Image 1 (tube, one colour):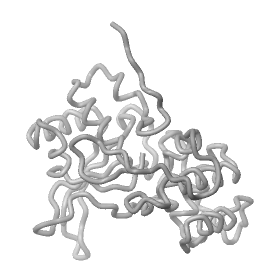
Image 2 (cartoon, rainbow, N blue to C red):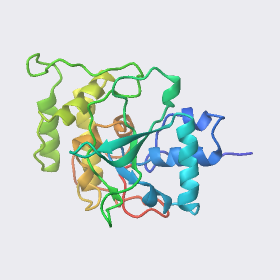
Image 3 (cartoon, rainbow, N blue to C red):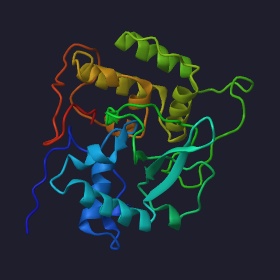
Length: 260
């Protein structure tokens, strides 16, 4: 049997192969896992919305999620309101099954899924911000430092990186924001440099700045997240803004544009 591959310079996803190689999982469960992991890191998913992106619908999705839960790819936990009562249940999707590795204190939340939205007609797919006070799952034993970076100056050029981004995209992001600093710090721990950050900013600004749908993703949580290396290795755009070729690649059956 022959395999025909496409050039992976756009509209592709890089994910951990663990779930795809896990022989305990059915093809349905593997497909659900791969699909959810293909979407942006900071998107919050509702089961009812995800189910609309396939012919299988909600019951099939629920059975696949149940299977992923049984094998450690999904964790379910309650979210309480200010009165201490359970307001809703959320599920976290992991690239690597959590039962087979030493759990860190605050494991990386790959993809949150909300069981039952509280509002009557919720926006099912949104870019609700997530907490980033958690380690990177690329290293299972990695933990966040508890030291105060303001008291212990770091050589990481947070201000230079964020200032470069602001200049390129015309925004005013703050370099002292905890979420932004944690993302930049994580990438430096991965071995990337300030030049790598500037190149990613150049590449994505050239692709997205003049696109009304994609320009919203020119922000630290998207550019400096887990897809950073993929962005860095993209071909085509090198520097400067203006030669935008981002018309927004669509996924069949999916409404809206996604920053792949």
